[in-house]
Length: 429
Image (cartoon, rainbow, N blue to C red; front, side):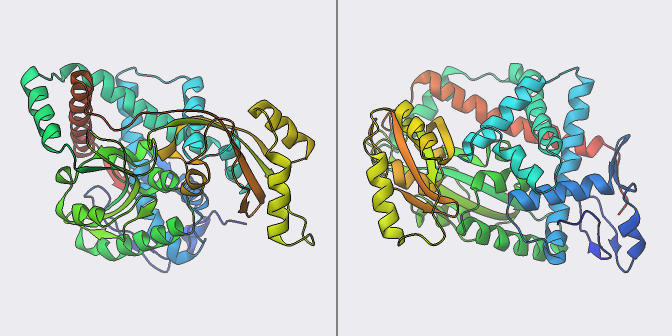
Protein backbone atom coordinates (compact mmCIF):
# COMPACT_ATOMS: atom_id res chain seq x y z
CA UNK A 1 0.00 0.00 0.00
CA UNK A 2 1.34 3.41 -0.94
CA UNK A 3 2.45 5.46 2.04
CA UNK A 4 1.11 8.98 2.47
CA UNK A 5 3.72 10.56 4.70
CA UNK A 6 6.78 12.52 3.81
CA UNK A 7 9.83 10.71 5.06
CA UNK A 8 12.71 12.17 7.01
CA UNK A 9 14.83 13.52 4.19
CA UNK A 10 13.77 15.83 1.39
CA UNK A 11 16.10 18.38 -0.09
CA UNK A 12 14.12 20.55 -2.46
CA UNK A 13 15.57 23.05 -4.82
CA UNK A 14 14.16 26.29 -6.20
CA UNK A 15 10.46 26.46 -6.93
CA UNK A 16 9.68 29.18 -9.48
CA UNK A 17 12.88 31.00 -8.51
CA UNK A 18 12.23 30.91 -4.77
CA UNK A 19 14.84 29.26 -2.56
CA UNK A 20 13.53 26.28 -0.61
CA UNK A 21 15.19 24.95 2.52
CA UNK A 22 16.66 21.46 2.79
CA UNK A 23 15.24 19.20 5.48
CA UNK A 24 17.38 16.51 6.96
CA UNK A 25 16.87 14.24 9.90
CA UNK A 26 13.39 15.47 10.93
CA UNK A 27 11.27 12.39 11.66
CA UNK A 28 8.59 14.57 13.22
CA UNK A 29 7.72 15.76 9.73
CA UNK A 30 6.20 12.37 8.98
CA UNK A 31 3.53 13.05 11.58
CA UNK A 32 2.67 16.56 10.39
CA UNK A 33 -0.06 15.44 8.03
CA UNK A 34 -1.97 18.68 8.60
CA UNK A 35 1.15 20.82 8.33
CA UNK A 36 1.68 23.41 5.62
CA UNK A 37 3.95 22.65 2.68
CA UNK A 38 3.49 26.03 0.98
CA UNK A 39 1.32 29.14 1.00
CA UNK A 40 0.27 30.69 -2.32
CA UNK A 41 -1.04 34.16 -1.55
CA UNK A 42 -3.59 33.28 1.16
CA UNK A 43 -4.11 29.66 0.11
CA UNK A 44 -2.30 26.78 1.80
CA UNK A 45 -0.96 23.60 0.25
CA UNK A 46 -0.80 21.09 3.08
CA UNK A 47 1.77 18.34 3.41
CA UNK A 48 -1.05 15.83 3.03
CA UNK A 49 -2.20 17.58 -0.19
CA UNK A 50 1.33 17.33 -1.54
CA UNK A 51 1.76 13.68 -0.55
CA UNK A 52 -1.49 12.70 -2.25
CA UNK A 53 -0.53 14.46 -5.47
CA UNK A 54 2.88 12.76 -5.43
CA UNK A 55 1.09 9.44 -4.97
CA UNK A 56 -1.22 10.17 -7.90
CA UNK A 57 1.61 11.22 -10.20
CA UNK A 58 3.60 8.10 -9.40
CA UNK A 59 0.62 5.78 -9.88
CA UNK A 60 -0.36 7.30 -13.22
CA UNK A 61 3.27 7.24 -14.40
CA UNK A 62 3.83 3.70 -13.05
CA UNK A 63 6.88 4.87 -11.10
CA UNK A 64 8.26 2.75 -8.24
CA UNK A 65 7.35 4.06 -4.78
CA UNK A 66 10.86 4.50 -3.43
CA UNK A 67 12.37 7.30 -1.37
CA UNK A 68 14.75 8.24 -4.20
CA UNK A 69 11.90 8.45 -6.72
CA UNK A 70 9.65 10.49 -4.40
CA UNK A 71 12.55 12.87 -3.82
CA UNK A 72 12.86 13.44 -7.57
CA UNK A 73 9.14 13.72 -8.21
CA UNK A 74 8.17 15.98 -5.30
CA UNK A 75 9.70 19.29 -6.55
CA UNK A 76 7.95 18.94 -9.92
CA UNK A 77 4.62 18.16 -8.27
CA UNK A 78 4.91 21.06 -5.83
CA UNK A 79 5.70 23.50 -8.64
CA UNK A 80 2.69 22.28 -10.56
CA UNK A 81 0.42 22.65 -7.51
CA UNK A 82 1.66 26.20 -6.91
CA UNK A 83 0.95 27.14 -10.53
CA UNK A 84 -2.51 25.54 -10.35
CA UNK A 85 -3.33 27.60 -7.26
CA UNK A 86 -2.19 30.79 -9.00
CA UNK A 87 -4.29 29.91 -12.04
CA UNK A 88 -7.46 29.09 -10.09
CA UNK A 89 -7.05 32.23 -7.96
CA UNK A 90 -6.81 34.36 -11.08
CA UNK A 91 -9.89 32.66 -12.54
CA UNK A 92 -11.78 33.40 -9.31
CA UNK A 93 -10.69 37.04 -9.43
CA UNK A 94 -12.00 37.29 -12.98
CA UNK A 95 -15.22 35.42 -12.04
CA UNK A 96 -14.47 32.69 -14.58
CA UNK A 97 -15.94 29.27 -13.81
CA UNK A 98 -15.99 25.74 -15.21
CA UNK A 99 -18.98 23.43 -14.87
CA UNK A 100 -18.67 19.91 -13.38
CA UNK A 101 -19.88 18.59 -16.74
CA UNK A 102 -16.93 20.25 -18.49
CA UNK A 103 -14.53 18.72 -15.96
CA UNK A 104 -16.08 15.30 -16.58
CA UNK A 105 -15.62 15.84 -20.32
CA UNK A 106 -11.98 16.75 -19.64
CA UNK A 107 -11.46 13.49 -17.77
CA UNK A 108 -13.03 11.58 -20.64
CA UNK A 109 -10.69 13.36 -23.06
CA UNK A 110 -7.69 12.20 -21.01
CA UNK A 111 -9.07 8.67 -21.12
CA UNK A 112 -9.48 8.83 -24.90
CA UNK A 113 -5.92 10.14 -25.30
CA UNK A 114 -4.69 7.09 -23.43
CA UNK A 115 -7.10 4.61 -25.02
CA UNK A 116 -8.91 3.94 -21.74
CA UNK A 117 -12.61 3.07 -21.51
CA UNK A 118 -14.93 5.54 -19.72
CA UNK A 119 -14.37 5.57 -15.98
CA UNK A 120 -11.04 3.73 -16.17
CA UNK A 121 -8.97 6.70 -14.98
CA UNK A 122 -10.85 7.24 -11.74
CA UNK A 123 -11.14 3.48 -11.24
CA UNK A 124 -7.35 3.12 -11.50
CA UNK A 125 -6.86 5.81 -8.86
CA UNK A 126 -9.46 4.28 -6.54
CA UNK A 127 -7.81 0.87 -6.79
CA UNK A 128 -4.55 2.48 -5.65
CA UNK A 129 -6.26 4.12 -2.68
CA UNK A 130 -6.16 7.62 -4.21
CA UNK A 131 -9.09 10.03 -4.12
CA UNK A 132 -10.31 10.61 -7.73
CA UNK A 133 -11.12 14.21 -6.77
CA UNK A 134 -7.39 14.88 -7.11
CA UNK A 135 -7.46 14.35 -10.88
CA UNK A 136 -10.71 16.30 -11.13
CA UNK A 137 -9.09 19.23 -9.30
CA UNK A 138 -6.05 19.12 -11.59
CA UNK A 139 -8.13 19.01 -14.76
CA UNK A 140 -10.41 21.77 -13.45
CA UNK A 141 -7.36 24.03 -12.92
CA UNK A 142 -6.11 23.32 -16.44
CA UNK A 143 -9.51 24.05 -17.98
CA UNK A 144 -9.92 27.22 -15.95
CA UNK A 145 -6.53 28.46 -17.09
CA UNK A 146 -7.33 27.75 -20.74
CA UNK A 147 -10.56 29.72 -20.34
CA UNK A 148 -8.77 32.58 -18.57
CA UNK A 149 -6.20 32.79 -21.36
CA UNK A 150 -8.87 32.63 -24.07
CA UNK A 151 -11.14 35.29 -22.55
CA UNK A 152 -8.45 37.56 -21.13
CA UNK A 153 -5.80 37.40 -23.85
CA UNK A 154 -7.63 36.17 -26.94
CA UNK A 155 -9.35 39.47 -27.81
CA UNK A 156 -5.98 41.29 -27.82
CA UNK A 157 -4.52 39.05 -30.53
CA UNK A 158 -4.72 40.40 -34.05
CA UNK A 159 -3.22 38.71 -37.11
CA UNK A 160 -2.85 40.77 -40.28
CA UNK A 161 -2.90 39.69 -43.90
CA UNK A 162 0.83 40.40 -44.25
CA UNK A 163 1.65 37.96 -41.45
CA UNK A 164 -0.52 35.31 -43.11
CA UNK A 165 1.21 35.91 -46.44
CA UNK A 166 4.66 35.56 -44.84
CA UNK A 167 3.71 32.34 -43.07
CA UNK A 168 2.18 30.91 -46.26
CA UNK A 169 5.37 31.72 -48.19
CA UNK A 170 7.46 30.02 -45.48
CA UNK A 171 5.25 26.92 -45.67
CA UNK A 172 5.48 26.84 -49.45
CA UNK A 173 9.26 27.08 -49.13
CA UNK A 174 9.12 23.83 -47.14
CA UNK A 175 6.95 22.05 -49.70
CA UNK A 176 8.37 18.60 -50.33
CA UNK A 177 10.27 18.64 -47.02
CA UNK A 178 9.32 16.58 -43.95
CA UNK A 179 7.29 17.78 -41.01
CA UNK A 180 6.66 15.92 -37.80
CA UNK A 181 3.80 15.33 -35.39
CA UNK A 182 5.53 15.60 -32.01
CA UNK A 183 4.83 15.50 -28.30
CA UNK A 184 7.07 16.83 -25.55
CA UNK A 185 7.91 16.53 -21.87
CA UNK A 186 9.90 19.48 -20.52
CA UNK A 187 11.72 19.40 -17.16
CA UNK A 188 13.10 22.86 -16.35
CA UNK A 189 16.38 23.47 -14.56
CA UNK A 190 15.98 26.85 -12.88
CA UNK A 191 19.16 26.59 -10.77
CA UNK A 192 22.38 24.57 -11.19
CA UNK A 193 21.67 22.48 -8.09
CA UNK A 194 18.47 21.22 -9.73
CA UNK A 195 20.31 19.64 -12.63
CA UNK A 196 21.01 16.25 -11.06
CA UNK A 197 17.42 15.75 -9.87
CA UNK A 198 15.91 16.66 -13.26
CA UNK A 199 18.44 14.45 -15.03
CA UNK A 200 17.54 11.44 -12.88
CA UNK A 201 13.79 12.11 -13.19
CA UNK A 202 14.08 12.44 -16.96
CA UNK A 203 16.00 9.19 -17.23
CA UNK A 204 13.36 7.41 -15.18
CA UNK A 205 10.52 8.82 -17.30
CA UNK A 206 12.27 7.56 -20.43
CA UNK A 207 12.49 4.10 -18.86
CA UNK A 208 8.75 4.16 -18.17
CA UNK A 209 7.94 5.35 -21.70
CA UNK A 210 10.01 2.55 -23.20
CA UNK A 211 8.11 0.09 -21.02
CA UNK A 212 4.80 1.34 -22.41
CA UNK A 213 3.72 4.13 -20.04
CA UNK A 214 1.36 6.56 -21.90
CA UNK A 215 3.26 9.66 -23.06
CA UNK A 216 0.22 11.90 -22.49
CA UNK A 217 -0.09 10.84 -18.84
CA UNK A 218 3.57 11.50 -18.05
CA UNK A 219 3.42 14.85 -19.86
CA UNK A 220 0.32 15.95 -17.94
CA UNK A 221 1.89 15.06 -14.59
CA UNK A 222 5.50 16.15 -15.03
CA UNK A 223 6.00 18.43 -18.04
CA UNK A 224 6.35 22.15 -17.35
CA UNK A 225 5.53 23.17 -20.91
CA UNK A 226 2.12 24.75 -21.67
CA UNK A 227 1.51 21.72 -23.91
CA UNK A 228 1.21 19.56 -20.76
CA UNK A 229 -2.51 20.43 -20.59
CA UNK A 230 -2.91 18.65 -23.94
CA UNK A 231 -0.80 15.61 -23.13
CA UNK A 232 2.37 17.23 -24.46
CA UNK A 233 1.09 17.52 -28.04
CA UNK A 234 3.09 20.02 -30.14
CA UNK A 235 1.11 19.45 -33.34
CA UNK A 236 2.78 19.31 -36.76
CA UNK A 237 6.12 21.15 -36.83
CA UNK A 238 9.06 21.60 -39.19
CA UNK A 239 12.64 21.40 -37.98
CA UNK A 240 13.31 25.11 -38.40
CA UNK A 241 10.81 25.87 -35.61
CA UNK A 242 12.79 23.75 -33.11
CA UNK A 243 15.81 24.69 -31.01
CA UNK A 244 19.20 23.27 -32.01
CA UNK A 245 19.51 20.24 -29.67
CA UNK A 246 15.85 19.31 -30.12
CA UNK A 247 16.06 19.73 -33.91
CA UNK A 248 19.13 17.49 -34.12
CA UNK A 249 17.44 14.75 -32.07
CA UNK A 250 14.17 14.89 -34.03
CA UNK A 251 15.91 14.54 -37.39
CA UNK A 252 17.19 11.11 -36.30
CA UNK A 253 13.83 9.98 -34.90
CA UNK A 254 11.29 7.68 -36.52
CA UNK A 255 7.52 7.47 -35.84
CA UNK A 256 6.45 5.75 -32.61
CA UNK A 257 9.83 6.37 -30.95
CA UNK A 258 11.16 8.82 -28.37
CA UNK A 259 14.43 10.71 -28.14
CA UNK A 260 17.01 10.22 -25.44
CA UNK A 261 16.99 12.92 -22.78
CA UNK A 262 17.87 16.22 -24.51
CA UNK A 263 19.85 18.81 -22.49
CA UNK A 264 19.16 22.44 -23.40
CA UNK A 265 19.94 25.79 -21.82
CA UNK A 266 16.55 25.79 -20.05
CA UNK A 267 16.37 22.16 -18.92
CA UNK A 268 15.68 18.69 -20.29
CA UNK A 269 13.32 17.58 -23.07
CA UNK A 270 11.89 14.22 -24.06
CA UNK A 271 10.38 14.28 -27.55
CA UNK A 272 8.11 11.62 -28.99
CA UNK A 273 7.39 11.36 -32.71
CA UNK A 274 3.87 10.25 -33.54
CA UNK A 275 4.00 10.58 -37.32
CA UNK A 276 5.98 12.06 -40.19
CA UNK A 277 4.80 13.44 -43.53
CA UNK A 278 5.92 15.63 -46.41
CA UNK A 279 4.58 19.18 -46.61
CA UNK A 280 2.11 19.61 -49.44
CA UNK A 281 2.36 15.98 -50.53
CA UNK A 282 1.00 12.61 -49.52
CA UNK A 283 2.03 11.30 -46.14
CA UNK A 284 5.16 9.18 -45.99
CA UNK A 285 4.48 7.67 -42.57
CA UNK A 286 1.94 5.15 -43.88
CA UNK A 287 -1.54 5.70 -45.27
CA UNK A 288 -3.56 8.57 -43.83
CA UNK A 289 -1.58 9.36 -40.66
CA UNK A 290 -4.29 11.91 -39.80
CA UNK A 291 -7.16 9.47 -40.28
CA UNK A 292 -9.95 9.68 -37.72
CA UNK A 293 -11.08 6.23 -36.62
CA UNK A 294 -13.69 4.62 -34.40
CA UNK A 295 -12.85 1.20 -32.99
CA UNK A 296 -14.59 -1.55 -31.05
CA UNK A 297 -12.45 -3.60 -28.69
CA UNK A 298 -12.52 -6.69 -26.51
CA UNK A 299 -9.94 -8.57 -24.45
CA UNK A 300 -10.28 -12.34 -24.37
CA UNK A 301 -9.00 -13.87 -21.09
CA UNK A 302 -6.19 -16.40 -21.37
CA UNK A 303 -6.44 -19.54 -19.19
CA UNK A 304 -3.43 -20.00 -16.93
CA UNK A 305 -2.92 -23.62 -17.96
CA UNK A 306 -4.35 -23.34 -21.46
CA UNK A 307 -2.91 -24.17 -24.90
CA UNK A 308 0.20 -22.40 -26.26
CA UNK A 309 -0.21 -18.71 -27.06
CA UNK A 310 0.00 -19.30 -30.81
CA UNK A 311 -2.97 -21.68 -30.62
CA UNK A 312 -4.95 -19.20 -28.51
CA UNK A 313 -4.25 -16.39 -30.98
CA UNK A 314 -5.41 -18.55 -33.89
CA UNK A 315 -8.58 -19.48 -31.99
CA UNK A 316 -9.28 -15.85 -31.02
CA UNK A 317 -8.82 -14.79 -34.63
CA UNK A 318 -11.21 -17.48 -35.81
CA UNK A 319 -13.86 -16.44 -33.28
CA UNK A 320 -13.77 -12.70 -34.05
CA UNK A 321 -13.20 -12.52 -37.81
CA UNK A 322 -16.80 -13.28 -38.76
CA UNK A 323 -18.44 -10.30 -37.04
CA UNK A 324 -20.39 -8.33 -39.68
CA UNK A 325 -20.45 -5.06 -37.72
CA UNK A 326 -19.07 -3.41 -34.61
CA UNK A 327 -22.40 -3.93 -32.84
CA UNK A 328 -22.17 -7.67 -33.59
CA UNK A 329 -18.49 -7.64 -32.56
CA UNK A 330 -19.36 -6.20 -29.13
CA UNK A 331 -22.26 -8.64 -28.68
CA UNK A 332 -19.81 -11.44 -29.44
CA UNK A 333 -17.47 -10.03 -26.83
CA UNK A 334 -20.17 -10.08 -24.16
CA UNK A 335 -21.13 -13.63 -25.15
CA UNK A 336 -17.50 -14.73 -24.83
CA UNK A 337 -17.27 -12.96 -21.42
CA UNK A 338 -14.48 -10.78 -22.76
CA UNK A 339 -13.02 -7.93 -20.72
CA UNK A 340 -13.15 -4.24 -21.66
CA UNK A 341 -15.79 -4.60 -24.37
CA UNK A 342 -16.49 -1.12 -25.71
CA UNK A 343 -15.62 1.66 -28.15
CA UNK A 344 -12.59 3.86 -28.77
CA UNK A 345 -12.97 7.16 -30.58
CA UNK A 346 -13.60 8.96 -32.72
CA UNK A 347 -9.86 9.58 -32.42
CA UNK A 348 -7.07 10.37 -34.87
CA UNK A 349 -4.56 7.60 -35.48
CA UNK A 350 -1.59 9.61 -34.12
CA UNK A 351 -3.32 9.88 -30.72
CA UNK A 352 -3.59 6.11 -30.33
CA UNK A 353 -0.91 4.34 -28.30
CA UNK A 354 1.81 2.95 -30.56
CA UNK A 355 0.88 -0.76 -30.15
CA UNK A 356 -2.77 -0.03 -30.99
CA UNK A 357 -1.82 2.20 -33.92
CA UNK A 358 0.37 -0.59 -35.27
CA UNK A 359 -2.44 -3.13 -34.87
CA UNK A 360 -5.14 -1.07 -36.60
CA UNK A 361 -3.22 1.34 -38.84
CA UNK A 362 -3.80 -0.65 -42.03
CA UNK A 363 -7.39 -1.72 -41.28
CA UNK A 364 -10.35 -0.53 -43.30
CA UNK A 365 -13.91 -0.22 -41.95
CA UNK A 366 -15.22 -3.68 -41.05
CA UNK A 367 -11.76 -5.24 -40.66
CA UNK A 368 -10.73 -7.03 -37.46
CA UNK A 369 -7.18 -6.86 -36.13
CA UNK A 370 -4.95 -9.79 -35.32
CA UNK A 371 -5.29 -10.60 -31.58
CA UNK A 372 -2.65 -8.68 -29.60
CA UNK A 373 -1.19 -10.27 -26.43
CA UNK A 374 -1.47 -8.02 -23.34
CA UNK A 375 -1.07 -8.58 -19.61
CA UNK A 376 -4.84 -9.03 -19.26
CA UNK A 377 -5.42 -11.30 -22.28
CA UNK A 378 -5.68 -11.21 -26.08
CA UNK A 379 -6.97 -7.84 -27.24
CA UNK A 380 -8.82 -7.59 -30.55
CA UNK A 381 -9.99 -4.46 -32.38
CA UNK A 382 -12.55 -3.93 -35.12
CA UNK A 383 -12.45 -0.84 -37.35
CA UNK A 384 -15.95 0.69 -37.18
CA UNK A 385 -15.26 3.77 -39.32
CA UNK A 386 -12.31 5.55 -40.84
CA UNK A 387 -11.88 8.93 -42.49
CA UNK A 388 -8.78 10.99 -43.08
CA UNK A 389 -6.80 13.48 -45.11
CA UNK A 390 -3.34 13.70 -46.54
CA UNK A 391 -0.90 16.44 -45.69
CA UNK A 392 -1.85 19.67 -47.42
CA UNK A 393 -0.96 23.30 -47.65
CA UNK A 394 -3.14 25.04 -45.05
CA UNK A 395 -5.77 27.59 -45.97
CA UNK A 396 -5.45 31.23 -44.95
CA UNK A 397 -7.97 30.63 -42.19
CA UNK A 398 -5.92 27.71 -40.86
CA UNK A 399 -2.76 29.82 -40.94
CA UNK A 400 -4.53 32.61 -39.06
CA UNK A 401 -5.60 30.20 -36.32
CA UNK A 402 -2.09 28.73 -36.23
CA UNK A 403 -0.52 32.15 -35.60
CA UNK A 404 -3.22 33.07 -33.08
CA UNK A 405 -2.57 29.87 -31.11
CA UNK A 406 1.19 30.45 -31.12
CA UNK A 407 0.72 33.99 -29.88
CA UNK A 408 -1.79 32.92 -27.26
CA UNK A 409 0.67 30.33 -25.90
CA UNK A 410 3.41 32.94 -25.67
CA UNK A 411 1.14 35.45 -23.91
CA UNK A 412 -0.14 32.74 -21.57
CA UNK A 413 3.41 31.87 -20.49
CA UNK A 414 4.07 35.55 -19.75
CA UNK A 415 0.77 35.85 -17.88
CA UNK A 416 1.66 32.97 -15.56
CA UNK A 417 5.20 34.29 -15.11
CA UNK A 418 3.78 37.66 -14.02
CA UNK A 419 1.39 35.96 -11.59
CA UNK A 420 4.35 34.16 -10.03
CA UNK A 421 6.38 37.35 -9.74
CA UNK A 422 3.55 39.27 -8.07
CA UNK A 423 2.40 36.46 -5.79
CA UNK A 424 3.29 35.77 -2.17
CA UNK A 425 4.72 32.24 -2.28
CA UNK A 426 6.04 30.85 0.98
CA UNK A 427 7.60 27.37 0.86
CA UNK A 428 7.59 25.95 4.41
CA UNK A 429 9.16 22.52 3.93
